[in-house]
Image (cartoon, rainbow, N blue to C red):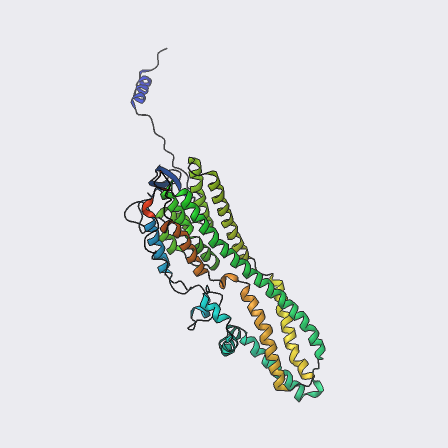
Length: 440
């Protein structure tokens, strides 16, 4: 049986048509991921994410870093200078009483110099501290509570003086017994707050050390084999201090990110939930890329990975201090015990036969000492509001940039030109322009 002529014509027509092309668009990525490194040559570095054009921005198309093409230590120094110039002066994220202060006094919010230490240990410190007593920060903080305590003392003395039949009597030894508990609770709380401050300062000191050591490793091991990726890593690393500071104080950081990174990396970092961790992840990606190519020694790889792990631990330590205070139950109990003791003190002093004036004076001094110590412990409980993170972030940026901007001279090895073939960058030029910028 022969097929109908219409069917044969349809089959012939279909055979002449071009085959259909099926196109599938990749699904949108639910989470921002680091741009993938595509190495065309050692001098060129471009990016893409799963074939999408969102991060497909060539490395040499910088908007603010360099206009001549590939990155260089000179453009790195220029961008570090721009960043530090933009944040010159006092830290605006400090409490208002520290920013508006006209006369410089010794505090924990700035890095000290030799002159500051000499002033701190001078014999005239007692006179200086007493003259500055009316302007004391602790006096201003405790003044409302002290005013209430003085009013209560006046009322208690007036009640016992004008209504002797209904006078309230409290033996002084009872209050003295309670004072030991007050001293113990305040001491324990203050020690805990000081330990938090010490832990936070050690974490930032560790940050300065690790970033400086990691930058030297990147220059010694990665820069000779791939300069562009090494400069990329050091740009990310220079932001570690600023991003950690912004995380601890909820400070905007888009300015430093846009200055130090290109558009692709800046977009990636800005969209991250934890930008400091994204910096570590980006550097680790570059290191893994070079290890896969076989250009990075195993010893250097392990050392760099150890430093990156330590930076992760430092960030976790700072997050723990910021997110976990001293248990509020302990703070509430301390406040209640302190109020009970202070309100019972003027009654006990009046019962012991002390005059009204002396009762007010002793109550005021006891209240200032105990309430002041409690206020100090409350401020120390938040160490990142007191630490000189502004200057420390600038120190991190300078220390990270120095190995690339001020490299050591090449080694004159017999029969060879130098240690890395880069004799023109022997560190014999002028001092970088970002060195004298004052951040304090």
